[in-house]
Amino acid sequence: MNDDLASRRAMLFERLDSVDTAPLWAVMSKLVTPKPQPRSVPAKWSYAQMRDLLLEAGVLITAKEAERRVLILENPGLRGHSQITQSLYAGLQLIMPGEIAPSHRHAAAALRFVIEGEGGYTAVDGERISMQPGDFILTPSWTFHDHGNAGDVPVIWLDGLDVPIVNMFDASFAQSYPDGDTQAVTRPEGDALARFGCNLVPLEYTPAGQSSPVFHYPYARTLAALNQLEKQGNWDRWHGIKLQYTNPINGAYPMPTMAAFIQKLKAGFDGARYRSTDATVYCVKDGSGYTMIGETRIEWRQGDVFVTPSWAYVAHHASTDTVLFSFSDRAAQKALGLWREEYAEEPSGGSSSAEEICRP
Ligand code: GTQ
Image 1 (spheres, rainbow, N blue to C red):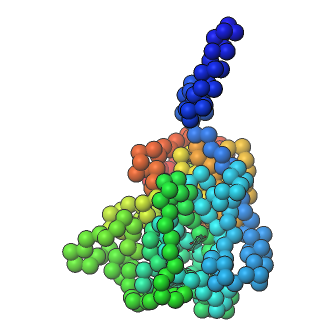
Image 2: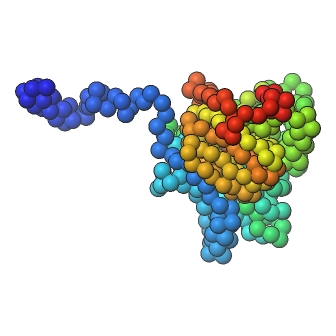
Image 3: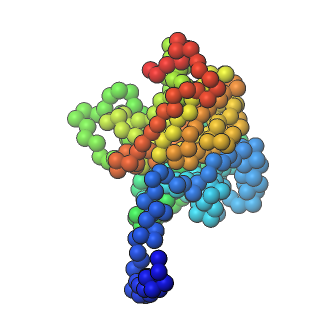
């Protein structure tokens, strides 16, 4: 390029800049990338370490003063943004015996996966349910919710929220419950599960919103399903035995933005590589093993949380019988027509016999 052209271009750039304009050709390859370029990286939060830190927070601030006593899990590639992935927030929440986390509601939707403790409860939209380890619980957008602990041990769970999506749209609203710390309980425990979670619905029921009317998915039921399928033994080479939580009304994901999954991996499971555009947050319900995320090896055990970035190859390896919970923004991506996945053919540890391992 001759000097004259270069200087005329530079002058144009300055004039563009002065009127809040920029030339596409200077940024095109960064802007419209041939494949995902996530800022998030593979990472793990060890439960042993997080639990100590949470319990220390437990003596320094009450749940009530904090409103929510949560340690935010920040992706090392996204520090300072309260994000575990580009689109999702995750945190570990602690409620000590006798404590209450006051009722509020927000545009952001939340999901919870209980890690430890008996006696915790959460109230959503007038129904209070007790939380057991392994339970999956929804707090759909704009539903009042408060938490408490009526037992005598700390209760800890993983929170997943779509806050970064809500804020990307500048659509955040939040408010406290207008009438005290805890919302009025208007329905008995188990009401939603009886009405909507037993392959039945109320007569001539018309869905009211976009989220599942079942907001409590007890682990006992989830585990029974996994164990029944395990008897049949058709382990998927990539995912073991993997199921997705559903809105029983329409088979959709439980909430419009987030999908959640549960999977069982038998001891010795040596999974093949898989990738998808939904960066995924995992929580180890039981078991131990490691996951290869691209070239990064992440060792995990019970309670650990780890994250896989968008479009990185993921392969799970279980040392002992394992159950993994996970969630992602797959619901939002699919609703927008963006979601992609890819199965790599061979298991990373060599080929396995077709009898043992096949796609269901
Ligand atoms: O339990 O309502 O981790 O509002 C972050 C924001 C939990 C909750 C979080 C919240 C909550």
